[in-house]
Image (cartoon, rainbow, N blue to C red; front, side, top):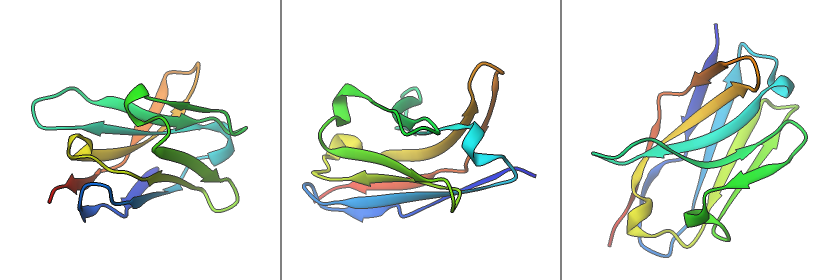
Amino acid sequence: QVQLVESGGGLVHPGGSLRLSCAASGIIFTMYTMGWYRQAPGKQRELVASITSGGRTNYADSVKGRFTISRNNAMYRVYLQMNSLKPEDTSVYYCNAELVGLSKEYWGQGTQVTVSS
């Protein structure tokens, strides 16, 4: 059974930081590209950042220079360090595991991030 379990969300003031964590189980972690997506109310889900098993990263333009994705292949975990948070970063953040080229992917349940004064 595949599980992706996110943690680390919460309420933070503008300019603050949060670190999201996703623990994966039930997959061969090193075969998957891991990603963080977000979805705000009334909006489509969008890619925030992704990282291949080899460590190649990709970021949405809106978070470049503020967010950093990383992974620990030994611990089956992926992280999203979010700095200089803005109110527009408020969303539910989802962990994603994708087996690129085979159309197989899995999603976590999501964790709420709220940026507000």
